[in-house]
Image 1 (cartoon, rainbow, N blue to C red):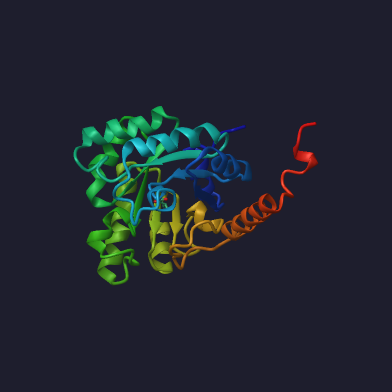
Image 2: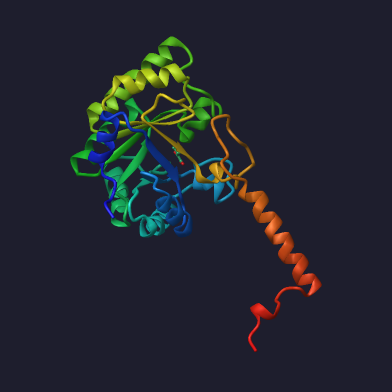
Length: 265
Ligand code: KIV
């Protein structure tokens, strides 16, 4: 099976074809997502919230990210796997960023994602210089939750919107191969998408981005502590799972399980 490449993703944008991306954090989920045919699997630091039960992504560590990226990469036969650089893995120095990003490639990722715009240009340039593909991430950047005062839509006034368009061009010029645009008004996401030649991947950015990404737990209805407006649930696996487990408990208690079929003679 042919692996999804940067060149293939850029071609999709040129040909007006949409790119699909999802997060995954473990082997069985990544295998399902890959079999379904998604283009990009992001091992997002969102795992801190949807897997570890944290309130935000800031405590997630490199070691945790590498653990999850290694097992996701093992499952992904076709999809491009990207590792999400966690808080403090790229801010301290460019050298540390190169070392940490390189570790993602060593465990099987094809590239990394970094939150930030103008502030991370030297990092993007150096990673690209050392052949580490970078997906940038602007708009709502969850690692900036304290500066933004929560997960708030970005670029609502003209100056902020222009700054995001400028930053999109800057990350492209610095060598990023793609750009996540999170939580911005629809028309701004369209303007950003039209301003750059690299593919934009929207999450809460409306329909004009070159692709879309969602957190898999949101899409499958496995996470309900909070549900952002941009989430569409395609299944309710939490309800299905609770029903199945309740049935199991009832059958254990009644003695119906295990039956003859599940027992050795
Ligand atoms: O951490 C994450 O999963 C992300 C995506 C939702 C873009 O950053």
